[in-house]
Length: 78
Length: 78
Image (cartoon, rainbow over all chains, first blue to last red; front, side, top):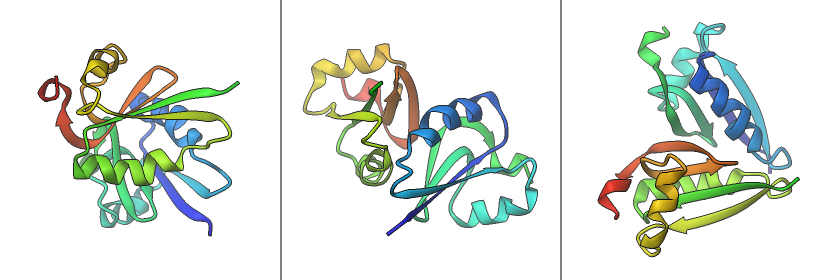
């Protein structure tokens, strides 16, 4: 079964480092990785909130939110 | 080239969730993943500190530390 990973970010330096390292380290054979820039897609902020995302960068794996270091609060992006 | 990933944890519930989801999602074809329980291997706390780890769970990818959610401060484990 293909798992779903969504990486939410806002283009911040902390976000870019997390994307280049952590998001790219996810196994493409098992996960479909969707990279979402919330600054460019503000309509998806509520989707991230529903998944439990409080700040970016964050990685949602099969519906569970993992906050990676800290770039910005989600409330500052909406 | 094989990349190196080290997942530091302390057996806490937040750590276990991060290990089961995030650490296991890392691509085994490109990364060698080392899972370190700092409560059982306190001698490795200084190694984690040197890599920039402040709290667990944390994932160090090619020497860069990524803190995943928050379980416990490293200073509480030493």
